[in-house]
Length: 309
Image (cartoon, rainbow, N blue to C red; front, top):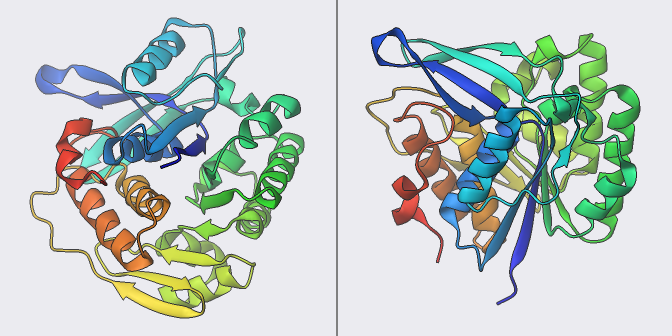
């Protein structure tokens, strides 16, 4: 069996979260890294090769991040180092199980991940599946964003699957109009869309998840999966509509990374040639397990029983 290659593109940040005794624990996270992490947890390296594409600084946290990813077999050889930058930082505070984020990311090296067009194009040309998000688009300046989207179009023309989660974060955008145009551009280049209904509803005015899926399909997306929290996801593929409900989950501690981990389960299963129905079932199970732990990246061994053969 030929090893397939997944490339996830975006920003990774240092994560601070309140721990016991009033101290804070340090970890790493970021939507596209979270997705790559759980694909790695769910698959064998000889089946799916997982790489992360970003830019980091030369600071100690950046070096610690690279060492951390290398230890867990998330490939970093495509990561660029930019000497006068660093990685961003975010703080998670919880109200019951719902998370709130405070960010420090203005000097993040990841904002320049699409600066080197030749490096970007070369990296994308080697991937079977390329994953990015609305946050990936948001952190890029307009010129770099256009370069990035053009590189994705070239990769798609060469046969890569392009997977996109809008993951809308209004505070990252100068206006709703700019954000809306960028989301539409993201959908237009995508082969697989994995939005959250609550996100797209606010921006596009969709009345329900089915209407959301149909609107996105009209952008030329062949497969659309609309997440809807603890309610059924809706899949529109090959002009067929499917609703897949999650199993009930008890003991929810932290919803950080829920949507990202759902995406990982779905993409990993589809890369393993499973049907959309089976992919959604696995995705719900992965997300249900993630929200019963704390932080974005849980121990990979917690998912060993879900690992794809």
